[in-house]
Image 1 (cartoon, helix red, strand yellow):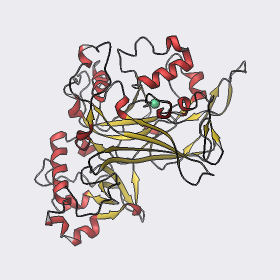
Image 2 (cartoon, rainbow, N blue to C red; image 1 turned 30 degrees about the horizontal axis):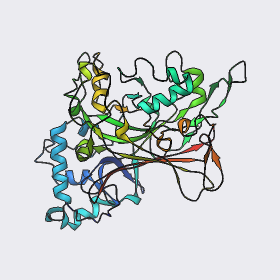
Image 3 (cartoon, rainbow, N blue to C red; image 1 turned 180 degrees about the vertical axis):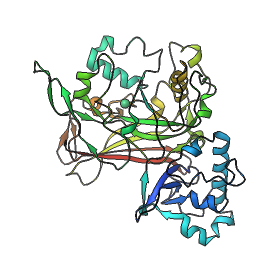
Image 4 (tube, rainbow, N blue to C red; image 1 turned 90 degrees about the vertical axis):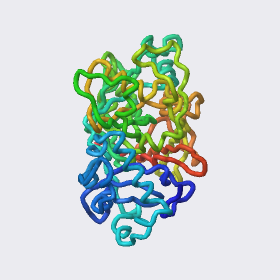
Length: 418
Ligand code: MN
């Protein structure tokens, strides 16, 4: 499968991917929905006007001429499949309809450098899980010692907490260092000031397509039809604020000052060829969390840091989504088992994705082991946590045969506290 639009083999956005996002022109325009191919954005509102989706479940509805993907996400899997098929046909080098329509290309094929990406969805609710066994074990060892590393519930429940949707920002948005209460080890009383232990968390998130009614549950077999696609997530965390506040109710201001997401939602259809078996689960989870088949995904995840003095971003971690102990179906089944309703556009994040080796940990907390082993940067500087002016960049991609299905990146720069 090839597109008439030139796509380099390294690109994250070949015709096999076709993620969805919301963009506006740098010169100024209202945000609309698009897809990415190679170095271009395809304005789906223009294709819609031309009737490209008339034969699908969308009919003549103006679903892409909106500033969010929610209306499309609510349509469900059959509509998503139909639209994807239309786009793959339209963008194929074998089909003349779009390939030879230079007038349409002039208005609908836009160089990526000419657009600003927006948040892809109106996110009503945001839940953050804690589903990497390696991460939970590392943090457990640091905070409670080796013998009590994993809490007794962890192997039975996909642990999570309700995050804050209002502070989710799209990649490229600057993040202001939070201030708050902390209690330094050598101090009798808590102190107030800018966080000194600012960290990132390497995560991925999935978006809810059609939701479920209050009081209803989504069975594990049904979960897949409620999941639209995935993004990269940096769940910024202030470790010193977290340490002082997190008991007894869990994370609060240490986490809700910002969460960055990548702008392109990669669909589950595009990720289908990269399904893999997850880790063995022992003890066997309860019935409502039990499923057969491959429900993890082989997604390479890399973290880079770009300091003010570094010339190039420097890679500090390489992990993979497949290390996650609890999979996205189990997370959604668990989330709704009590009758909690979910809505279109809700985002569920994985929790920090740490791999088994020291160079695959998904946070500075783990990579430097609470600052005990600082990361040495190529210019001689060191980092225990994230400094003002540092940019954290996360990239994710699946390796296909001669192509990638990628997520692009999520990047964010830390600005000094106000
Ligand atoms: Mn998190």
